[in-house]
Image 1 (cartoon, rainbow, N blue to C red):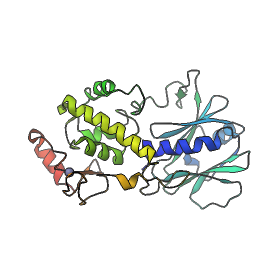
Image 2 (image 1 turned 180 degrees about the horizontal axis):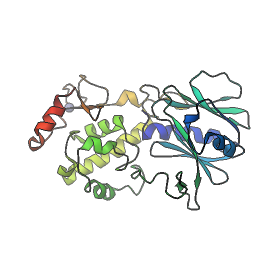
Image 3 (image 1 turned 120 degrees about the vertical axis):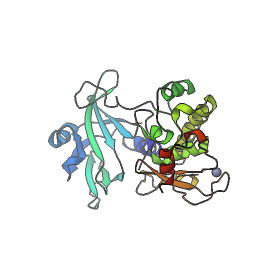
Image 4 (image 1 turned 45 degrees about the horizontal axis):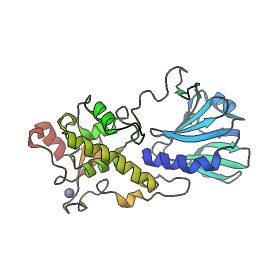
Length: 297
Ligand SMILES: [Zn+2]
C-alpha cells in the first residue's frame, strides 16, 4: 500500500505534467469513487478549473485548483494514476477520468476500488476544509515527518505523550502522518528497536535513533521513487526501494546487519518483520501477552 514516499513520488512526477492544465470534463463509472460532494456536483464543479499545483499531505495527493478548489485523492491499496492522450483505450479498472482541455486524460486505475477523490474548498490561509467546510480536512493527521519543523524536540514531545508499542504507534496517522507497514518495519530495523517495545520505555538515545531512522528511511525511499510491491507504480513507472528493504517482506532471509533470519509476527492483522537479535526486547517487557504475540506467525 502506498505510503508517504510513494504518494510523494506521484505528486512530484504529476506536478510538472499537469500544472496549468484545464479540466474540461470528468467521467467515472463507479460513483463511490467520489467522496465529496455528490457525484453530480463533483463533475459539475470540476469543469473549467485549472490545476495550479500538485502536492502531498499524509498519504493524500492534494491538487490545488483555481477558484478555491482542492482535489484530494487517496490512491489507497491499488490506485494508479496514468496520463494518456485523449481517446486512448483503457481497461475496466479505470474508474475515474479527468479529461484535460489540452487533449490528455488523467486516469485513476484501481483494481480493488478503494481509491477516493473529493473536491473541497480551501480557505484564505490555504487550509483545505473538510466536508463540513469548517474543520481542516487533515485535522486528524499528525505532523509531516519530513517537514523542517519536525525536529527531534518536536518528535520527543509527541512521543512522550503516547503509550503503547512502537509498531502500532508508527502506523497511527494521528501520531505522525504517512508511515505505513513497510516503512514502520524499516525504521524500527534501522533504529534497532523491537516493534513490541513500549514507547514509554525509550531512552533519549533510542528516541533520537528512531527519529533519525524515520526521516532517513522516508528520504531514501523518496529518492528511490518508492517501493513497487503489489500494485504501486508512479507516472514514470516502478519505484526501486523494494530492492533496498532490510526487514519488510524478508521473512527467513538473513538480516543484512547480523545474518540471522528475519522474523515475522502478526500485529494488528499486519505482518511485522524484524531481527530478534538486532532489535532486542528488554526482558522486563516480555509479559505473557507479548510472548503470545511473539508466537504468532
Ligand atoms: Zn540482525
